Image (cartoon, rainbow, N blue to C red):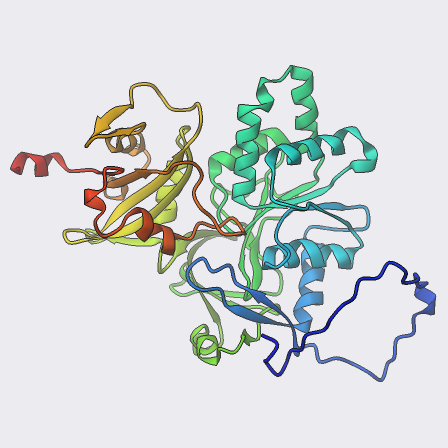
Amino acid sequence: MTSDKHFRAVAIKPSISSPMLDARDIIISSDRALDENAPAVVIFTSGTTGAPKGAVMRRAFIFDCALEVADHYQLDQDDVVLHVLPVHHATGVGINFFPSLVSGSRIEFRSGGFDEKQMWERWKQGATDPRKRLTIFSGVPTIYMRMRRYYQNKLRKLPTDEIAKYVAGARQFRACLCGTSALPQPLNDFWKSIMQKPILQRYGATEFGAIFKMRLGDNDVPEGSVGEIASGVDVRLSEGDEGEVLVKSPHMFSKYLCDPEETARAHDPDGYFRSGDIARRDGKYYYIIGRASLDIIKSGGYKISALDVERELLSLPYVAEAMVVGVPDEEYGQRVAALISLQEGEMPTGLLRMNCGAKHVLTIDALRRDLRERLAGYKLPTLLRIADGELPKTATGKVQKKILGPRYFPADHHELPKVQKWVARSTLAKL
């Protein structure tokens, strides 16, 4: 990376003896200025749909984006931000770190891997000790899911007065944020009941920042929406009120590091960045339908949103996580395949059976029956696999469908006992 002509490596030595300067002693030279469009920092994309790419961010991104985020969430010097996300990723640095710096907020970092027990204990401290209070928390769906699971499996079994201390810890925050992927509605409902306020969701990307956001105090955001368009951003949907999200933003990256061809492919002829994500607009609110290359399943002549199916799967009390992908099929073009992990202690009785020598806690027939009132018949999964434990994710909590789809539903999936296949009765009658 340091071979690029715009960048150089700088060795920074630790120091504990640097004297503090009074602001009045700092002299700013007015005859020197830095080009705000010059490269400032490289942030690598999460690599959800392919290899991570180095997005070169301009100097203006660091300050202007931080000011916009700080203003949106009304950060100030009285805020204490609990930072648990990777600082090498756009969310960790662009939503939590830089905005806290420009607003004078205090940042508390958590070292080591995420631990839901330690997090609940830290939240409780903030509610019981004024010196350890917290005001802002930013997570991803995986974090909120693990903390809910710990609450349901451990905390709610405690005496009532002890439970109240943990609930008070959750309610101390004036804002809890969530990004990187969609927050399942049942998970959102749980936290809303605990915190007595909604989690503020957003949509964005490393290349252009957050462009759809929920606002503080807006309790009328419809279910499934990621909020309104952010200020100063130009967004088009390729087909009017629905289509690919096309973006021009003052926080836009300048290029992919050492990859001019990919930079050119990422923009349309009018200079809009092609996000690859499909969304729809209803009034002032936006809804993400899914990734064009991964989340739109073409099955039997229908176009099916994988996110719609995932949303309904996650509304079932016994489903903890869900990933829906299209699996190649000679008859339908693609089959709707669901990989799910189960919610501990929530499985209804009577769903256990043996199938092809493998024991299934949940059968595909039972799952389709439970989904039938929620989804049209052509959207129902015809392939099902139960994951052993939590679904694998990236460092930022994203499920890599491009990798996990072929891994769990390979070309020879019909030979795997762990993969259940639904067969229509009309087909069975012909056999």
